[in-house]
Length: 452
Image (cartoon, rainbow, N blue to C red; front, side):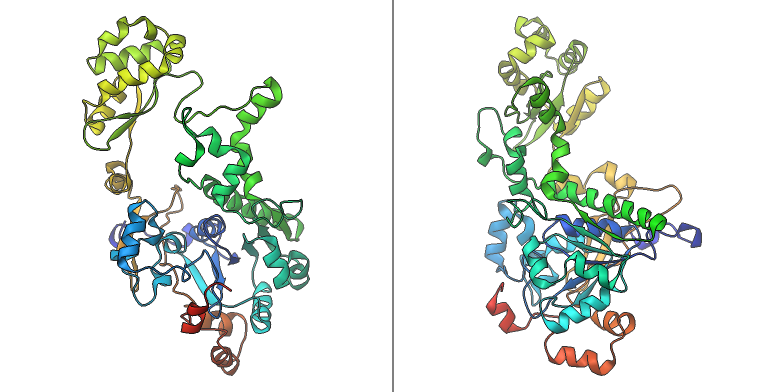
């Protein structure tokens, strides 16, 4: 979607969270994803981030790579390193794709909550916000002296969402972990492992982070509704592990109710066969199939000129196909590899068979379905250029929406926030700049020092 194709918004189309102000001290994906969603629906999100110290796992100034290293890492699928044109540039922290993917519609305030001047500015900010979102290890927040007990004395209406890996108490309280560690701890990695493989072969999915973003935004919206009724804010504790566990509810109940332990499922299903990813024509091309009934299997065989499979007694019923699923997978693979994945997708869908092509990133950006819906939006970022970005995830009948502003450069909005919102004088603000508390870049000595 470009400016020319965006619908017009008038006063009757105000975004639902307009008037809500959110501060965030977040890292990696889960926390920034929460505030991405809140910002997309109108909240004024202020990212609090230091320039006189490196906040790890955020803009990644602690991991600056040259072109060769960037290309090599990106070739492994680790796109965190994929600067535009693989060039770090003079300010790679403003060009980082991981950060820029979730920072649109936000503002940046240079502020180090671990210094006395920064903590004072942060406490002033808390008086002016409705919500604070953080997903640091609890010890970090405690050492900074900005726990909820402290902040609610400054702003009793504050809603504080805290998203540690395992909780604010208990023996795992201060264990550090990303989404992939949480998924390992609660069993997700093992469940999705192939039945003849090991979890280390599966790679990372970070599903816990993705789910936590949606759950966290929902929790904040619910707390805002509660505050409308009661007048009081509150702390919301949402550990990554506990937010993700309900997604594995059927496996937990199968064990607690039936005594059956989870097995390594990979792409298999407990009763459907064929079920999984099968080769298509071409190099590294694949198609996904999910066939549950005899009628669906017969439709697959007829549509692909594979009626001979219908005469195989091993495949004569759903139970038999599941029992002999490895032989079935081999037979189906020999059929699907003759077809273009897109053509097979349309042929089998027309025959009533659940099918989809397996798309890589480039396929996704070329999707005719997403193009027809105007999902991708062009966004121009200073120093990065104009590119297409994933757009808003939902469409509302009476509330047109689109990405309003590009990701902020580090400290980009400090002047407006300190002076216009927090009431600092021009002299006080310039003193903070002179002290290195506020700025729009990381000084060389900070970069050389690394994470501290």
